[in-house]
Amino acid sequence: MIRPILIHPDPRLKKVCPPVSDVTDDLRVLADDMLETMYDAPGIGLAAPQVGMMTRMIVLDCVKDGAAEPRPLVMVNPRILSASDERNVYEEGCLSIPEQYADVERPAEVEVEWLDRNGNLQREGFGGLWATCVQHEIDHLDGKLFIDYLKPMKRQMITRKMVKLKKEMARA
Image 1 (tube, rainbow, N blue to C red):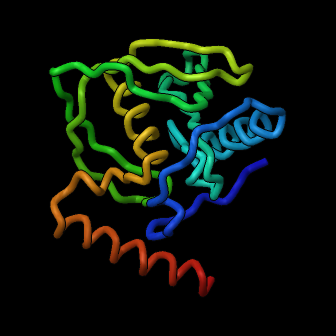
Image 2 (cartoon, rainbow, N blue to C red):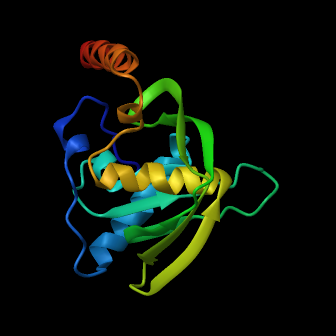
């Protein structure tokens, strides 16, 4: 089921999500819904708070090549174990901040640990777009948006655009 995506500013997007204590069937349904919502948007990552669920879970799939096999990942309680000193800059966007993009600098590589959809502990190193995406989505679980990395003036400008967009959407 495709779920509605919250648009910034929304107080739920600024809250820290508590850890998941148990991977349940309800959580797996949410994961499937989130993947369907992400692909439909279309996006490469989505965090549970973006669909109004205050749950420490993200989904991502950074395979951009249409000929390649998709690689949907479900991460419950993801945490970054280590990050490289080397940095990368990517132009980031967000499904909760539509049509707004900005360069954000983050570690180029990260090692992440999480529970998969069956509750099994996983650990993997990510680089490039995958590293940026997983960091961006984990930030959502901590109430942080990519615009929080921007200078105040640019952040305020984007927030004003989102307030205007939300008013237009409410009228439609």
